[in-house]
Amino acid sequence: MNSLSTKYMGLSLKNPIIVGSSPLTATLDNLRKCEDAGAGAVVIKSIFQEQIESDASASIAEIQDYLTHADAYGFLEGASKDHYIDAYLALVEDAKRILDIPVIASINCKDAGTWVDYGQRFVACGADALELNQYVVAADANVSGAEIEQGYVRLVKAARKEFRLPLSLKIGSKFSSLANMIRQFDRLGLDALVLFNRFYNPDIDIDTLKFKPATVVSASDEYVESLRWTALMSAELSCDICASTGIHTGETLVKQLLAGAKAVQVCSTVLKHGFPRISEMLSELERWMDAHEYSSIAQFNGILAQERMDDPSGWERSQYMKSLAGVREER
Ligand SMILES: Cc1cc2nc3c(=O)[nH]c(=O)nc-3n(C[C@H](O)[C@H](O)[C@H](O)COP(=O)(O)O)c2cc1C
Image (cartoon, rainbow, N blue to C red; front, side, top):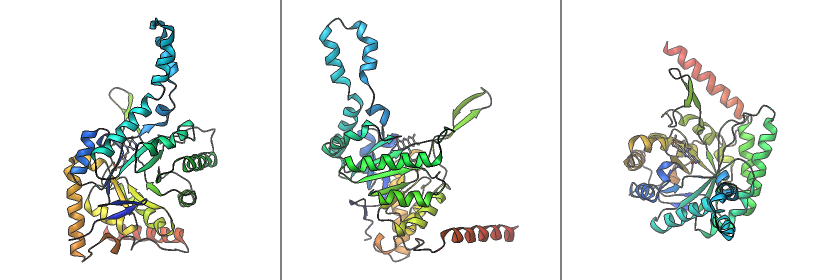
């Protein structure tokens, strides 16, 4: 019997498949389906920074004309100020109550705002860990790349100080020196980096001449970007890497583990094929381990990480040249 167990940000997972933050993890019913299908952990659908920081008094002011009782305003303001965060933390608490697998809470944030003050409440509700999805689309031409990077660092420093539980950061891949940023994040004391988030993209409907959202689900070949950076960085980091985006099959799961990921997150493949996809991927992993005579993940985890390379850019360039030569030979 193979052991599929892995340690991810200090948590013991029975296997490396985590269901990523999405509608798949937004309700207790779905969270239970994730566990029943064999998931090793779940990341609950994110609460947004804007929801945590929402000033309920503004919306209440809009309805105050309807309030006949002078005291009601103060009462309603107090009762609803933390409306979204209360509901979110209750979901995490309920998830902890009904599930045996680790439950990771998630905040979608853009900067180090007042949401950071809520660290203690996340600890109190029993979340096993917290994932920060720092979602910044660099669309403001007045803001330099350096300023954006400083904003990331400020946020992680503030969160690390306040959140006394395992903390991960989920990022996109669009940094001019991604390797340098990954190293900086690692040195800020994070427990894990999730590589990568998949950003919303707009598309155009040529019949209505209007913008529409591009497809929200990933394609099965999108895993290669995460694979590259996991392989390049995993050996030198103190924190764990969780690979994410385009991981649709047991085969891509195996590749990410070979590159050094401690766990992977899945979302699109489960949205497309249903919850049984999780157990199918685990069976594929077990079959591969049997064929290669591995009895535990630890035996092969990270064996293809690009360890201590003197010249990673040179290695990248030589891989590029090899792949072009391969295309020429095929023609
Ligand atoms: C409909 C939908 C909603 C999502 N909502 C969130 C979210 O609230 N927070 C978050 O961190 N990621 C969210 N994601 C991103 C996923 O967690 C994941 O990072 C992304 O889909 C890439 O993984 P995949 O290729 O396995 O889908 C969402 C994805 C989808 C498709």
